[in-house]
Length: 387
Image (cartoon, rainbow, N blue to C red):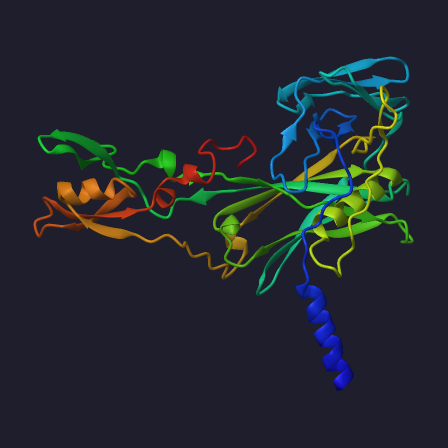
C-alpha cells in the first residue's frame, strides 16, 4: 500500500512539472519546404500543396506561392500544374503512361529546385462497396476492398461528406427600413406578398465536410489482400442524417515508403499529447533540394490512379434517429420599436399570433440568423450528384 502511494506521488509530481519545450532545431527564416499531396495518374485531378514550416509557437500556415510545379517523366514528358490559389497547384487530368516512371519538379521564386525520386505508377483496385452498421449509439461506415493480384498491400482513404439541411424555421418576412424623425426604424413585410410563401432560397442547403484524419490500412500480415476498414462514425441524432446524407470515399494504393511516411505523420499529428504517447519522429521523404543537398524537405510523392464510390443514406432508413434542432424561437410583438430592437441580432421567421378576426398580426417569431438562413451552414445550390 505504501509503495502504491509513493508511486502515485512520484507520478503526480512528474506530471505536474511542466516546462515550455524549446526545440533544438533551428530552421531558416523562410522555413523548410513542405510538399503535401500525391500525383493522380488517371483522369481525376492532381493537387500539390506547398507550405513552409513555422515555429512551434506560430499557429499560422505559410503557403509557398509563385512556384513552377510540374510532373516530369523518365521519357522527358512534362505535365504542368497551375496555381489555383496561393500554394495550391492543380492539374485536371494527367492520364500518365503506367509503363513509365515520373517525378515531381518544383522551382520556387528564390530559384531553388526541388525534385522527388522517380516513382512508378501504381494501380489502385476498385472499392468493392461502402457499408454501414446502425445501433443504439449511432451509425458506423466501412469501406470494403480487395486486390485479386495481391500487389497493393498498402492503402489510404479519404472522404467527403455532404448532407441536406433544412432550416429549423421558415422565413416568411423581410425587414423593411423606415426613415423616421427619431432615426431609422424597422417593420416587417412579406417575402412574397402575392403568394404569401416562405423564402425557399434559405430553407434547403447542402453543407460539405472533408475527412481530416489519416486513414491507412495494410494487408501485409494477412493471408489475402482484403480489407474492411471503419471510415467514420456519426452519433445518433447528428444533423448529418436529419434528411439525406452522402459520403464519397476515395481510395489510393501506396508504396511501402509512402505508407511508412504517413504512419509517422499520423503518430506525430494524432498520437501526441501526453508523456505516454509515441513521441514525434523525423519525417524522411523522397523529395530533395537539388540546389542544396543539405536542406531538409518534408514530403513523400506517390503516383497512382484514384478509385472512388458514393453512398447515400436516408433518414427513413434509421428508425428513431431523433435529430432535435438546438435552435430556439423568440416571440416579439408587432410594433416598430420591438422589431427595430430585434433587427440587431435576429432574423424574422413567421407570424405567431393573429387578431381575433385574423386581419392583423399581433406578434412574430424570430430566431438567430443561422436558425433561419441555411446558407450559414452550406450552399443553397444543389450538388450535381444529388438525387
